[in-house]
Structures are given as structure tokens and as C-alpha cells.
Amino acid sequence: MDLREKLGVLADAAKYDVSCSSSGSERNVKEGMIGNTALPGICHSWAADGRCISLLKVLLTNDCIYDCAYCVNRSSSDVKRAEFTPRELVKITMNFYRRNYIEGLFISSAVKYSPDYTMERMIEVVKILRLEEKYNGYIHLKAIPGVDQRLLDEAGLYVDRMSVNLELPTQKSLKLLAPQKDQKEIMLPMHYLRDKLAENKKDLIQFKSAQSFMPAGQTTQMMIGATKDSDFSIISISEQMYDKMRMKRVYYSGYVPIVQDNALLPTTVKSPLLREHRLYQADWLLRFYGFQAGEILSPEQPDLDLEVDPKCNWALKHIEYFPVEVNNAPIEMLLRVPGIGNITARRILQARRFGPVTYEELKKMGVVLKRAQYFILCSGKYYGAIDIDSDKIRNRLLFLDPKAKSINVNQIGLNEYFPTIFN
Ligand code: SF4
Image 1 (tube, rainbow, N blue to C red):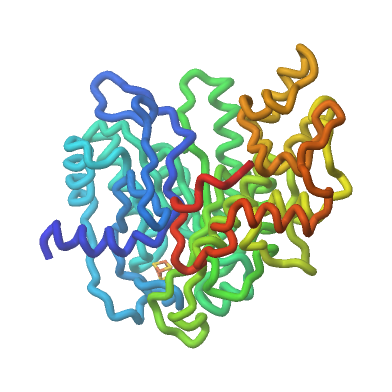
Image 2: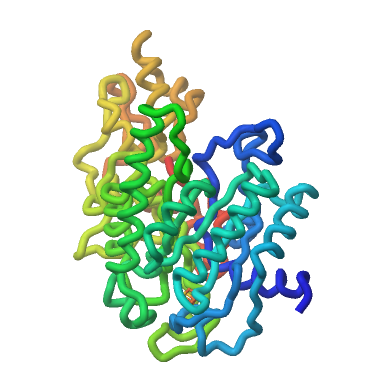
């Protein structure tokens, strides 16, 4: 197989991995080195289906000893197998980088022979890139559960970011679809990397000579829709990932039914991209809006509403907290108003120092009044024009945004719906 053919096989095999955004790393231009991650920075571009395409996203090999039911590369799958030698992958990366095709490398791999063997080969790639080719661009390496800690130590010195896929939200689902994997074993490298990062942070302050250890931190990814796990179980585990593992990001990958297996949902059942999108919105609430998973969903209401975004849904379910007076509400409450985002909440606080904020000024500040009007008072005045009643407001919001109601959830792409989120 020539290099072009290998690239076709191994880049295609990597396309289901979505955890590749590159924010958080600041590797500046260095004399004698090629590339950087800060200037002009890594651009995130997204394919129509929402997947990041700005990096060379590739597997070292798709030859796997495991047999995960949801994976196209599983050992029992009848697909063409290929493997790069480390030098072949270095050659492609450098050629693509020099031609400006890519702005970084996202390297992952199926597990060939053993986790250690595979990880050693991936480390060889990043070491040649950094030490021989003087490549100073972004590298994200997918770590393999079960790998020796010394290999994590070594990899962390050369890459910007590492991630370990959580795969599925519960041990039960993992046992069903990936019986050779174990959630505890997956968590071990996450714990280790979290502790190493904390240690490195201190070292960098104390010692001038300390070497940076994966400066863009760690991320993880969960597949959604391959099992019957609820959105509540998914965002609850995400909350733990942020609170306990100090993850930079949790990615949600809607299951793409490419494999037939009795344990999986039928291949005709597509996980709606809108569900993936709602999970990202809920994730945003966890990270930036002070919400807890238990406030967004509960065992009684375990799945996200596909018609209304999670913040709006929370407000409609807690209508007793509204309307909020924008001229004296604390920031925590402003952040809970649909239509007011993180930036606009801060703008309101700043403007309040100089006098009461008017309804007209809110629009200039970027408040999305078509939603916020039902949840706020401005100097005691309500502009919503309908009663403060959950059902009425919900109907009005859906009427104003009929797209939400008419969405064919199996067809919509993330980009198409993206502008309406997060406020
Ligand atoms: S270990 Fe990874 S590559 Fe191998 S079958 Fe499982 S998901 Fe696929």
C-alpha cells in the first residue's frame, strides 16, 4: 500500500473522533523551529456535520486487538487495514504543514499488539517531529487506557494536549459494547494526567528550567446514542469530569450507525445531531453559567428537551424566579435569564454603575430580547406583552423560532442550528 492509500484508510478511520479542538495552547514562534499554535493560532473549521477538520486527524494504525461493537476498526470488522511507520506519518505531517494544508496534528490509533506498543509508536512520531523536524505546531495525542505511566510522562513532554476517550457514560454500557474495556482502567490515565498537570503547574512557577507538560490539558469524549443512556447520566458524568478530572472539554459524539451488532441500536436509528447540540448547550451551562447537572435534568426528567434549549427549559420550569429586575439582580441570576449571556451579563453590571439600564440599551449590549423580554423587568417595567406563564412563554418562543419545532432531528447539521445557542 502506498502512502496516499494508507492516508486514505487511516484518515477515514479517524473521522469519528470529535475531540480535537485545539484551544488552550500557546506555543509561540521560536527561532530555528517551524510552526506555532499561537500566531496565527489554530483555526477551528467544522465540516457540515460539525466535525473539526483543521488538523491532520489520523490513526497510526486501524489494526486493533479489541472488538468494540460500535467501532468500524474492531478486530472482527472486515475493513482494509493499514499502518504508518512513525517516519511515514512524520513525512506526511511536515509536508502538509509546509503546504499550509493543516495547522496541527491529531494522532490517535487502534490498539495494535498492546497499549504500550501502540503508545510507544505514537510517541516516536511526536519525538521525531519535535526533536528532528523542529516542528513547533499543535499536537493532540490520544492516550490509550492501560498504558504504562512512564509513557504518559514521556508523551506529555512533547504534545500540547492528550485525551483518553471515556467512550460511554456508564460501566454497564461499556461492558455491553466494549467488554474488553473497563471504566476504572479508562479513568486511571485521566487521574494520572490530572495530577501530573497540577504538579507541572507548580514546577513551572518554582523552577525556571521546568519543562511544560501538555499545556493544553486533557479532554475526553463520549459517544451518545449507541446505548440507552439518558442525557442526565451523560451530563452527570461530564460534571464529574470537569470537577474532579479538571478536563478542558468533554466532547459528545453522536453515534454513527456503521456497524451491525445485536448489542447496538439498529443501524437505521441515527442519533440526532440536535441531541448532540443540546448536550453541548447543557455542557456550556455547567462550565460557564454555574449550573449543576441536577438542575438541568433529573432521574424523573432524564432527557433534554429538543424543542427548547436547556437554559430556557430551566427558566420555564422555574418561572417563580422570574421576572428578574436587570437593574439590581446579582450576576448569578442574570446568567440564568434566557437571552442574557456571560458577556452581556457583565456589560449590564458595568453599565449599572453609571445609572439604571434601559430596555433599549439592553439590545445594544447584545441581550437577545426576543427571548429575554419574558423573563426580565427593566426599572420595574415588564415588556413581555404576555402573562408570565410557562406554557404561554414556551408557545410564544416556539412560535418566534418555528425552526425549533419543525426540525428534522436526523437531518440537521450543527452549523445550521448553531447561531441560536447559549444565551
Ligand atoms: S479499541 Fe478503539 S480502535 Fe479498537 S475497536 Fe475499540 S474503539 Fe475501535
